[in-house]
Length: 425
Ligand SMILES: [Zn+2]
Image 1 (cartoon, rainbow, N blue to C red):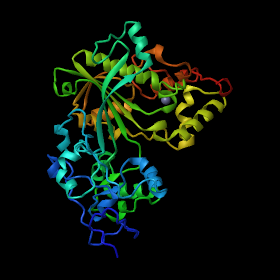
Image 2: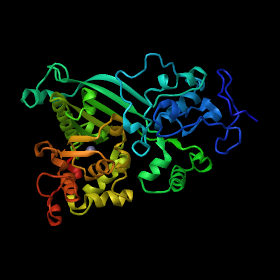
Image 3: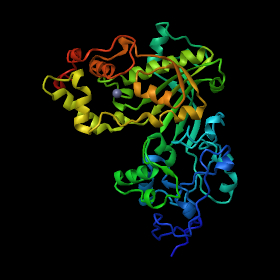
Image 4: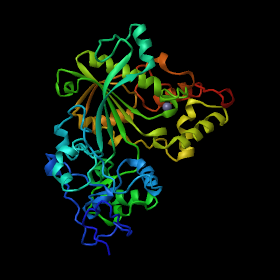
């Protein structure tokens, strides 16, 4: 019988299979008081395996990348006892604390102290507990080719600080791993915590049995993609009511964002968002791009490409009136991005008002407002930025309630908007 109350010592890898799923009476999870005013009072999120019975989180760090870590351990490339040397890894700029950090209803899907663990929990770490940051804050210079065109056409003006003559932009960038406080997530979705835990357990094929056997563990590190935040301009502007905030919340679309596929508006809208963020930062404000790893409306890229084929091969070809229907035929639903958790990174940054919301999504707008973030103005993508084959998506979305400066197309007009045939790619 192994002693699962103590951290596993270096060099003495415990080869017993420890079923953490059942309370043994020996487990002593580190106390965690979600929504507490200070990091000390809140306590650290402990999700590392070496912490043994002191773990207070279900799942593993690094989201879906935990599986690659497992391969590294299985192949002998990584010692399972490795503890990170966190020297010089602290945030490149200070973020928070903000009042939202101590409101348990405001932040439920990330650890607001995730970037301060080396400082906030230094005593625990010194005592040998393996605590990992779930947020990292650094600085970067972005080279976005489209910005050069904006500069040469006079729509953007280099200032030597936020936007350089070379067309490069300076940003603070923040990587956030998901940390779900299950009672808060359940509340956000209007369901009972027990129901949420059971469904998560079942729909992951029983991967995380503690979801149903350890109700004392309230935090879950889900195996999903995280969030990256790109901040243009001075972060301090967020807390200044006289300063304005521009923001685009963008859901990942590798095909368009990275490779320029023209079937959707993702990259052009992202560029329009970056453009708006730079302008806002230059006008005594700050611009924020929140990039969520939610590929293909969080249905994944295989589903997305299957839908593209189904759209283009259906009788009558790809057309706006059947846009959502084709997704629903393949996936069973139109969209599983569920924007309910989306405002959390903005709460974390202290945002209470977005002056220019660079998005047409009614779902994102509703989630922001529901979560108490005021939206002053909504910015649509300019018509000349919409790629040819993306008209089907755009018209279908407008008809379904997306914000538009013009009038939404009538249902009978939707079938007139056609996409390219599959053979004419
Ligand atoms: Zn896209």
